Structures are given as structure tokens and as C-alpha cells.
Length: 172
Image (cartoon, rainbow, N blue to C red):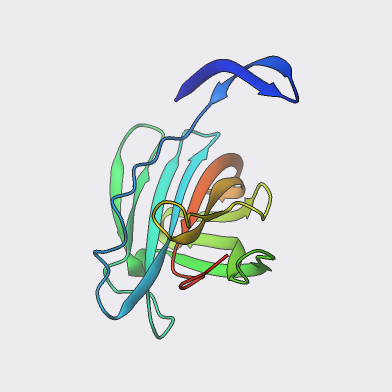
């Protein structure tokens, strides 16, 4: 969403303008007994390709077979992606000094049939949310940078990642 306004830091007001992300979380109470959380990715590339993927994680660490996604091509055509259509490989991890949770922090995402190879890296690691005063859920949600290729052409972009279920019940 286009955004503009004023931001005051240490008594100094600055006009700001840019893009914002709006997310509406319906809660994690819909998880089945064998599920512990999810990894969700939203990606917008400079070639106008967009991608949404999620991996529901089971207690044994494997992805739930109902994990899926949507690819939106530059011309607006969409393709539903089943778990077997894409791969998400964790390349790095980060341990939160506040909650002690260890989160994936860099990913390689491939969609072989579409010749999509991407690397997703958080803008910075410390984007963990500890919500003891409201929902009492600790999770990681934040901005990311994306680079890679679509049909062998270099692309860059931005993204947003949300990960739940890594911190368990945390008391801060």
C-alpha cells in the first residue's frame, strides 16, 4: 500500500513516503494437533512476478502435504502451486537473544517447472515479535530482500516472511 505521513524520532519530525504491508492474522488456533506452525513467504519481483508460498510444519519437522502457494505471472495469470511444485531450503539460521528461539534466516526457493530460483534474505534478523501483553505469541515476521532468476533472467525484489511455532511458550 502506498504510505505517507510523519515520523517523529527524538523530537525531530520527518516526512516519510513509501510502501507498507498490511497483514491480518486470523490466529493459529486452527492448527491441527500434528502441526506446530508455518513459514509463509510473499514475494514481489522487479519483472512483475509475484509469489506466495506457505509451509505448514508438522511436529516431526516435515511440511504438511497441504502446504501450497500461488504464482502470479507478469501478465496476471495465476498458477496454484502444490507442495511438490516447489522447494524451500534453509540456508542460514538466527537465534533470538530475547526468546532463545532459533529461526531460519535465509532460504533458497525453487519452482523447477517455472525455472524460478530465488534467494530470500531478511532485511535484518531481529524482527521477532514477542506479544506477551496481547496474544502471548512469539513469532518472527519481517521484510526481506529477494534475488535470483526467472527463466534464466536475473531478478531482484522484496518480500515479507512470517514464521510461527519456533519459540513455543516464551515468558520474557
